[in-house]
Image (tube, rainbow, N blue to C red; front, side, top):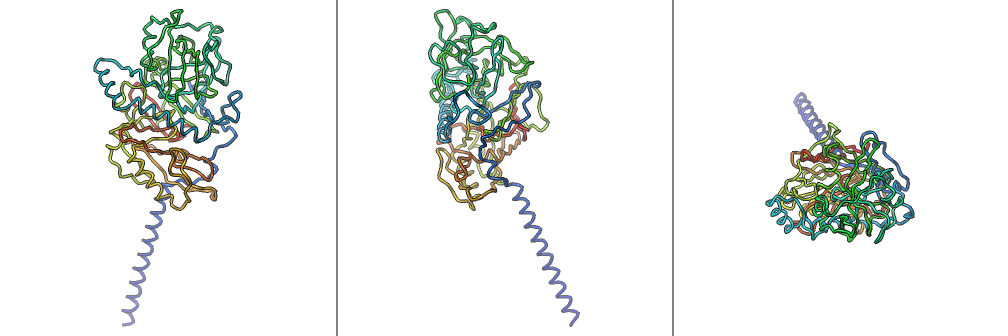
Length: 479
């Protein structure tokens, strides 16, 4: 009898021990799984700094330019100190750009584009203009002979490259460098309004080119926020690096320029039109470029041209839905939050389509996709007090009582099984410590195109391989 009691006791003890051990192991495994899908960071790492902290990635010898944020300490326009726009102004400008993109890529516009394709044309209607709004990122290039350096906003959603020019017949806004004077360049030549390249302007600018009294081709381009540039279409030497010099590069010499370009001399067009830098430099760079947008406005990234690619880059095909437009389309298939794939049908993304854009700040999602995303995000952030919404951002938190915060990881999925993990600096948009918001917004209409914005591209190496019809992503692009 005593032996039986000892045996039963030992059996129960063993079973209890094994159960407790298994439970502990399961809890540990679940905890490790949760930790793998969370970011734990210092709050200060999300807040902007007043000191520029440059990356060493950009190197002139490998066709690479340094990228700086237009509203940060790494870019110092003359006389512009203290004039950076507020967060609300940036978000309003961003919405102006998005509205312009949606107008340009509306169902009616797409129908007109389809009809043009049937006729063998690849041009855009002249009624919508172009987009710029909140273009944030600046590179420095050389223009003219002898070359002079100018700061230009680079934009994957625009095609025409232009800079302000003397004598500024209409108006020139204040810029960082002295305004370009074509009379002091040995290589500057105006384009005749009877030339075929002049007539090609319409597809790049959305406006029929004019003809000046001296038979010079006149371009006009108006952007979504009512900014505009009008001037002479010309051929000039463009210098990107000491080894990369392009004579007879087609660009605009702006004589009447107004808008939200603040400090930049003009625009560097990286769109898909024949007049963009991508196509004009195709013989050297093979229609390939990449960039890394810095993690904050106080650090730097790079814009690199040519075929060199990291082995870690994963490519997704360009979407066929945007052929004939300036934009780079992607086929988004899903989103995950905290390691869990969200229950969103792929048709939610495929019906309107998605583009990737260097000039749009906040990623725009179809309304249903955004609702599911923010619901999942809010559930995982329930321990933090909420804060008031800011403009288009409706999911905000007060972190003022925290030095360290934990936020769920977010990933995008694209055609070809490509998963892109959003950097932690691309998940939240900081206004101040007491108001840090989820950096995503929903479109107002399910048919409006989705936009993969530049905040979500922070620190990624984004590779545009136009010749092979694909866009690639890799982590750690700025370091």
